[in-house]
Image (cartoon, rainbow over all chains, first blue to last red; front, side, top):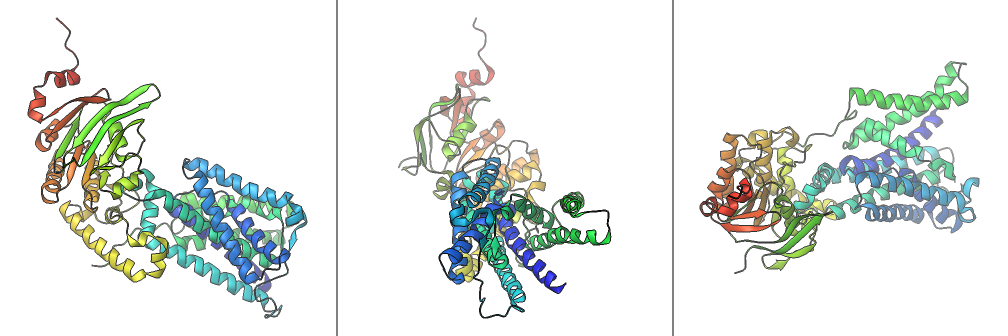
Length: 300
Length: 257
């Protein structure tokens, strides 16, 4: 049971990093990203391929995955930034699928649906197999904290104020002298960086990645985390990611208490439970469990 | 000395409609220049062309002698040209104080690396911006609304906030698009007074589109009249009031005898 909790905690960590990144892009800056699964896959395969096929040490492969996410984020933002918000949504969704389909079909490189086996793990030789899951949970937790610290610093800084202004009305921000294009590209890149990080951490954790993990439904779970937790509030995001994961996983155990549901019905039930969570939250707390906080003036 | 703002031969059409046609306009430094004309005369389009929100089909804009025709709106703002909108467009889910603190240009803490590498300098600048915002709120009589979301203000208060925001910026020229629209008479006086103060005490130059002729009469000299996308005439308000073509543009042609 405790092994299960450790593993679940690790997965919550991946969710938290992805959700914090989405909150930066959408919750604070107002840029829609439906391609989260693609960025996640890009990070996982960049780090995975570099270490499994080219023998690059993990300590370099993971930063390379972050960099790939950064570059991809900047590129997507630059390509679509002049489009209206709904077009950005379509473009990101498309990019996510393109990445997944490349991974699926370029199987000489990626192993495609057979799955890519990754032996290398951070500090894999130094830590015994008994302790390793616990160590990895700590590593992921540290990465969550780092992501949180960066996102929170941006939110609190004058930059966060400008980003929220862009979210509220980009034309007014622009005529007030804010370089809207630069800020959007920057934030999409930073978000991409962390999504790449989450992907790399995932890859070296499960050690066997295949394209079907990176379906667009991953993006939906992350979106729900942000909406349920409270867009614009980084603490809310952590809570939201936790809540969505508990719902996703918790529904597994319902099957243990009743014979009426077979595995197939159970997996359908889980999606229903998530939908229900979303509806109830939006009815009771339309701005999420922890809504964006009002700006408090520095004490005089 | 060249005028603060010079627009030459500005044209812009939307589909088959020529909204602005070969329009030229000067705004002299230190003036409050009025821009009037009947609905559909192209005043708002001209504002959009001057601030760069839309691109001109033809023509040239110069600010302080520098050609800004092809510059993005934010670059024009950095050079000292700020505008407001006809319907006050506030950052709704940001407080009055934040709306003001947002405005100063090129803040250190708006850049990525200084947030992490020079937090002390960012904080010091932020304290300075805060102090300035408090002064401006005092001038604009907005202090009691400091922590209210801008979206919750009345129409007139939003106009006031928009004007106050320009005070946070080191700008030379402020384009006001119907500052008086939907503002109650009491607040109208505050607003008029504030524009006059900004002009006299802070040396700001204004170009104002307004339908309220009392406001134009009180504040503006000279007044530029536009009709059907082009310049009709220019002069003091008193001259224009008796100008037959201006009267005709507003009231329509009297049936020929």
